[in-house]
Image (cartoon, rainbow, N blue to C red; front, top):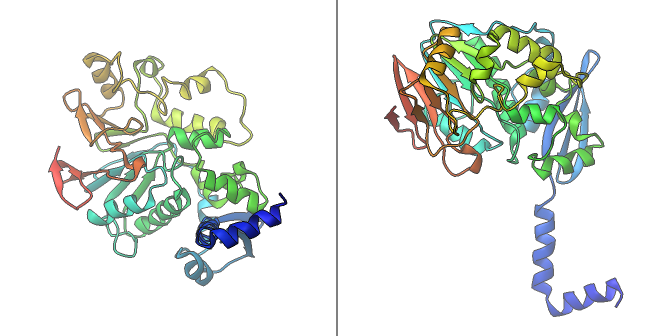
Length: 359
């Protein structure tokens, strides 16, 4: 039976089904972006709207705001591009601190948590004054609103700086996976979008892309007062190498997160291994580090607690008599999640409804 005859019979016999299928296909048309790329002293925007690629060279603030609700002057893109990388990530006397981790493209839940705890306002703009927000890795992977989360954090970083605050986005294993062209956990939406835009998947966050250039400058280890932050954790094997945070951050930026860096030496291979700070799970899976191991790690980094994501938990959890706090509250499923709040020396699990539970 010819295809056209099959369609005719379907229309005659099951007209409601045909309407449903057509509506479903229309609803599945991809809308994605924006992706903004540097072109000399200008920028070029590409995006997909209802399955159609669109493009605009050198957009102004009004266009970015009206088209994408992105309230950023394009000059910010060039300022960030030219900004020197700070490998020495130590911060003192931070009045208020919030930590969220492993968002994995769950934009709605992320915004809900940030609003509920006074980090952003109803317009998703910075509201936390001189406070600091740590996004402890893994914005990328799994979910279908990764781009929205990245632009939100990019914008908040700029806004926080203007108010004396700070946003820290640390590299997670899913950011590393993307940069190394491992797309196993990338939502299929993004592969479809790249085909429509006529670019490679790896181009989405290339060094020539605004988000890609920014992403590759993110640190791996930071300290805020007496707290040590990294995505997965510091292993006893890591400690044996006596690697200061500055050296680790420099290694990642200079040799691991560069598109041209494909051959790793022994140190770089270790840093991206299961014992490295982006993949280690030893705080949650046996064999656990000893108390002495943890105390030695904390002494080396002059810290009192290690705050990590990477391993999903039912709620933010304090482990090893408070030496470790796991902050991956399973946001990735988009159902529930928590944010860590530290204010006036007290630590809380911030819940979706705005309530807080002392940790």
